[in-house]
Image (cartoon, protein in one colour):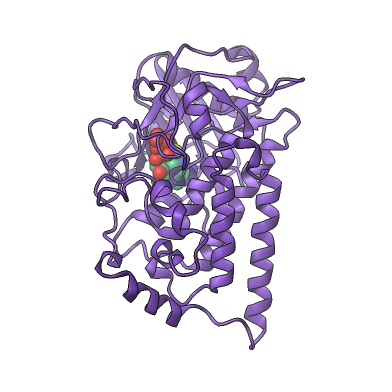
Length: 402
Ligand SMILES: Nc1ncnc2c1ncn2[C@@H]1O[C@H](COP(=O)(O)OP(=O)(O)OP(=O)(O)O)[C@@H](O)[C@H]1O
Ligand SMILES: [Mg+2]
């Protein structure tokens, strides 16, 4: 969730390829993505009473959620983020009353473990947006708890966890995601963002990243974490002026330097995620060699080149994609990452491009004379690229070691 770290961004001018190199570090852990935060608080437009009254969600007591998670047992932890820990629990399908493990439905309970106004504000923003918005590509919020100092949120359980885990975590449970599934997730997440941007009052998500893309049992992508979401500009306003928040490596350069938030900031973050999906590499990874630590900076010069593109593409995808389509996806990422926000496509355009590519692939799978995949070409280009190509995969971020 979008709890931010108190790192002040100095308004450095962004580098020409679209990222700000003045990155901070989360708890000194260079492997984690770092939250950004500047300036003063912004106002939540609706009152807390209005939001809680109109949200149509179940209000849980603390003891209900405690019981559903068996006293927040450590072995039921699904993950950990800036907001707090997420626990697996069980409730009755209809009444949502706590039940025994194996009875009813599984839920994910997020418990705020930080004190202070920011955590409460993000908890409320989550209820504000997910209490009103429903879409197949947004995670479903079932209810919340507000009792004394306790702030919790209860969601539908997403059995395949986060896209971040699937892309970057190693181990027998996390087999490399296939090209087809990666494209499916990219399209689903794009549809979620497009829905937000096209809502009656535009919603800017502001924290688009792989850990916030959750996956159901069929790898349908659902966006979670609306703690940083904001209503888009209204009337003749071109942007919303905000405190700069989000996650380093994903936040758009113009947003970092000015605090001016537009839907195009989300498009930039989508471009970063698309690059992560293509490459299997994290947006920022201090364990990579100098010059490769920032994925956007390193990858952009390779994206339009038929030979150098293989340096970027995840070697675990070899043989699963056609070069033509990989280049199209890479080109889409490139467009999303344009320094000039107006040049970036809209989310509707992103969705159409990904849909066309997916339709092409479906047709090709049915057609025995399909364009060959890239196994051989990829192999020769990789050899040409030399020993550096034996990519060192990043370790999972600290928040994943739960
Ligand atoms: N509804 C859910 N179903 C299953 N797992 C979930 C669910 N919600 C969260 N998780 C797991 O818990 C992890 C932590 O989620 P959380 O949103 O608190 O933090 P994050 O997104 O990883 O990091 P950050 O705080 O930087 O946004 C997720 O990465 C995911 O693995
Ligand atoms: Mg999250």
